[in-house]
Length: 266
Image 1 (cartoon, rainbow, N blue to C red):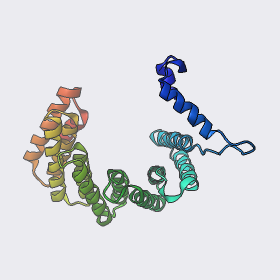
Image 2 (tube, helix red, strand yellow):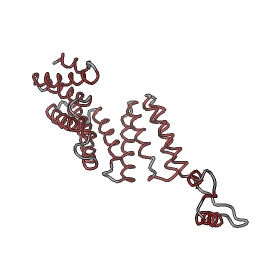
Image 3 (cartoon, rainbow, N blue to C red):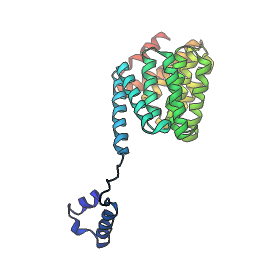
């Protein structure tokens, strides 16, 4: 009734008779009988809002590189969520994701691996196995494995995330391009330069179509392609790709130091 009161200038006199009658009847029905204690209404919404605020604080700690604080805040959110409604609480998956990111940043790979698994399992339990909410922990988990050289374990996670994105967002979405770029980075770390070239090429095609040929994200993937062309011994291609990247950077942001340095190296 707060909304109705505001519409009527905080006066009930303008309510329709039926509405006013309904309010009176509702108040009578909700009133406790004599000698009976009023029912206890659990403030679920307030609890949810509190946990969301706490989780945002943990994410803020991550952004500020306060990884220990981020981990402890997120762990507290997960503990409260479990106590509140068990393993199907919607706050569990994002809390475990923050914990995993913080643990990874602290160099605690084993703990990060455990937390990523928890985040994925929780998201699957609540949303299903092919929901977009699963993508972030899948990509983070893949990045963890890629960063420590466990490429055979990283690739299936990236591919699963990619399949979910293509199914739910469409094959031409910029999020798909980002995942292809990450797959390319993984291949480069694994010294698999030909597959990296293919992944970067797919990312470039999506970004050019979705964002246009003159965009910083297009320049970024051109830079990756150019450097990879150097690794593949294709110097002429590398120069052409890096020149395109430089031209975009000059047009959008002024001269881009990164692509120019890469061009000099080519």
